[in-house]
Length: 153
Image 1 (tube, rainbow, N blue to C red):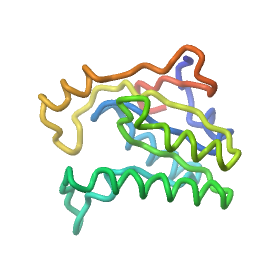
Image 2: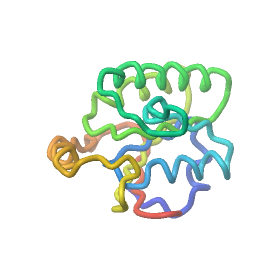
Image 3: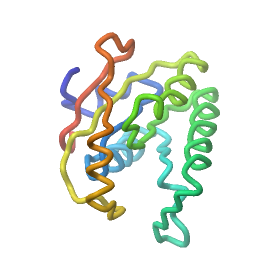
């Protein structure tokens, strides 16, 4: 795993998958890639904003993730660069995005976000603790470049 020194390093990839706990910098990094380099920013949390207010609904989580995968595959097939920012605590949670990038024949990288800022969705400490306990590391033989992001690059 290499440290992410510059956002420019990510521009050679078609699909950038961001993973990390709430408050680790995923959304900030995704917004920056979108604004500075034209990536299409997708994340499940976008589907919980109603009239400008974040309203998490656990009953809609699976649907929100499915829409992100659908939109990512569609954008990749159209030749767009995509950044997907979700917690992806467990490896199976990122499998559909990895599969979409591979199905579309696109270059994929993973960025593990490790910053420690206040999480913008006020995720309770108990939920954060459970996520931290369930965190699964990428296998050593993972066949895509992996970067570590700790702050604004």
